[in-house]
Length: 188
Image (tube, rainbow, N blue to C red; front, top):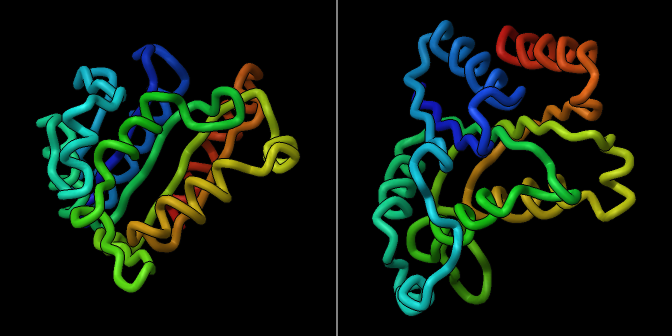
């Protein structure tokens, strides 16, 4: 199976980077072909430009990285997002990725005012870290579940999305438990 990981963290010694390495190891052990999109390492610019906006409605890319990323997503059977939650939401780098890569005619189409996903990815996984619980995220509208998973990912054709969240990332015992949850996910 072809798995694409979209990884977003600025520091390569972070716990998120350890999660990335753990995830890659599990996927490779299962025989999956793994393609890592490391937005920071790639030097991806999440900011929209006038040229990006001009080409948006035509489903064309000004940014060659965005054009490369969509082709990699189209080839995926499984997608995994790994990122920290900052200010109750995705980091700006990931938001920019979603804005610049998931274009009409590429990731979705609109027919009779209804969006239809074009990616046809049958398995998704969102791995997040923060110092806030899912319950407290729900208090602010649960942007990861409601906007990212139920909104964006669903609308572009990413199905069967699971979310595993580490809510007290600063505690060593939470990190250990989280890595066990990830291992359990891949072993089942």
